[in-house]
Length: 223
Image (tube, rainbow, N blue to C red; front, side, top):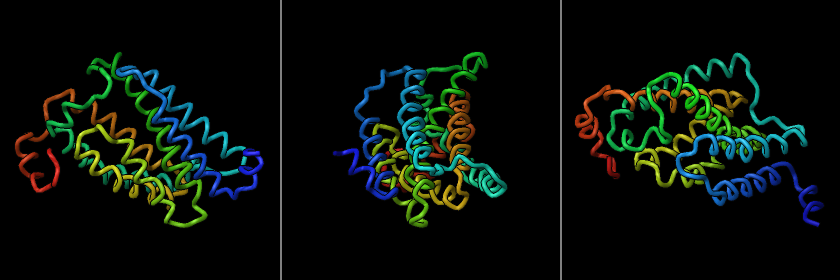
């Protein structure tokens, strides 16, 4: 009965319903703390395999395309977010929280860590910006407004400044991916940005932390 009702739904409703179920499953499926490999497999199954299977079965695109527009927007978005990662890496709250999984500057340890981090980001972008944005682009640019609250909710527990910026970042990434018809821009900006952030926090701060904190004291959150 439920399968028949689901089959009669238009694609937008199917995508949103599936997205809600997948998001709930992600929150309810416990992840052992400190196990990066488990997290990578966990996210790949929920955020890549399930949305991917749904899209393929319906002949839909989740933004797994690369063309000149996508490449251009990837470079522009990466350059735009780069200063945020550089400044953020000097914040005490960020340096305390990251890397989320233990690693070191030894390349034999850091590179496998970075690869798994990137897989987690590809999974997240396939879900948030793929299924819930590019995948439902038929409704126009407002598709970028579907997931910000959910995206912010999934950032609860992270440093306050990251939680504050999560919803606006989701909208920005969604709009860029929508215009690109590709999730490549957000994968590169998010994935390589996190890898860069992990690398930077393993080294002395680029900017004096006390000056960065002082400059951001106007924000209504602890820095």
